[in-house]
Length: 637
Image (cartoon, rainbow, N blue to C red; front, side, top):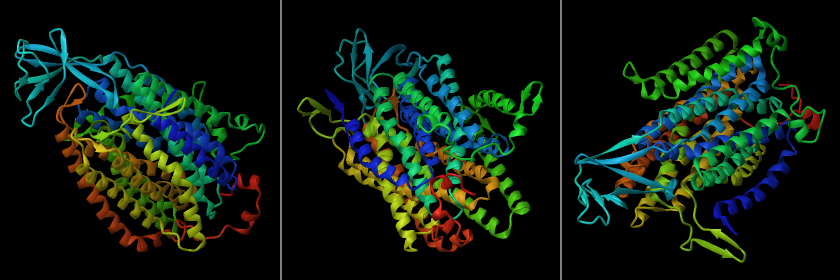
């Protein structure tokens, strides 16, 4: 029996890290268990699809690098833009729980729709009036593309002048062995528009589903804790472990199935994961064998339940109308996910929509601060908005993972761990190589290892009154993401004759990105819930995800600068591709490090805007210390 290396490592890492996590969770509200497992499966579905998406675009539909990176950025930008709508509807009408359940159902539909892939697109070389089809086999880094000339197929590459060199082509062939640059062109000869539209429908369902779910489930985590409870950051970090446990296994399993069995298998498994996540959340009490006990307490309920039941459109209640509009909104999102191809006043339409969304968010918060907030509350919100804006830079660079870094793994990284293809351990063999999409598991795997460490570190430093302030943690995150890219640039000097960088450098970059993420993401989530008044906490959390939306859009733009010439999804000149990656990675690495230093220098002034609310230098109130598990599950704020 042969086991994939990453699967074997994943089992060991999960067992080793899960034990201390679940031991630590005993000290937290019981409702955290439900949210932990529900979000774990939701992330399994999302990251299972995400790890395959850039390859699906470039290899199945044969879109070029620039379009695929832009499309990837458009999709992920909308994933983080729609929580503005979901957060508002939850705060105003549905409550967190109903919004989460509805969003999860849309996600199930979206992921299963992704499994309807249809026939792959076909491409050909056109030379001197003749058309010669490109024949592709495999997926990801294992993909091979051959040129069909007559009854035989041949490998090909490009030389430094850009000429197409056909390997082993006999002199009697209909075309020469070297096609000069400019003498030929590539042409898509088949791409079924119906399946492209089904693909966009699947993305629209997923985007709308995340819009209703993402901000609201994070908001419930914050509501499980007392206002000044220093366990909050630790709780968010443990919750973050659950997120990444799902992400970790999604990259391993969905990536493995998607690249070795078929795209439908990887996407289908992601759909199964989301269905399990919905069951955990909706039927959580039964799954935890505690019937009759509400593990989440009163949090997440509708603000005015009776208002939801009111008839507003014939026999249709307000709640039913919201769900109906949500389904209808999928068609709007279907159009929006393609908006990056539509120009409006010299700017693509998606950029315009993001700018409008950002202005509406900031405008509403200014109005709220002026009309509803005390001076201290307004200053705390200003700090929260600063953190949101700062995170845009981090996420724009970090989210190269799913696009440019994923393609870098497939094209310019040596994915073998040892010379031997299989390492035999008695009756069990370990396959000593990875698929390209499985490298997406590095980030999540490192979080599984280091999330408990960081949770304990913040708690330990808080007891010593030495915990770095939240802004300084953000600065450290920027520096680390920059160093990760600089490590990849260094790795280029160790590339082999095939222009592939040793895997250790990509793993090291993901390690630095992960430690940066742990300094920013769970801390940022916690800070937003602490700095925001209860009336707008879900909306502010949606604003946090809005920053990711801007970042994803910018990430797509950055990734287009790494685009290289491909034929049927295969790179023509690996040396030029490696040089292009190195140039872009170096530029963004330097920018991140410099900005991180600047933010760090001013962090000690900026933290004062929080008036102590964003830091963990306070003690748990005596009443909370004395409370048992059931009291912890029903926080006052």
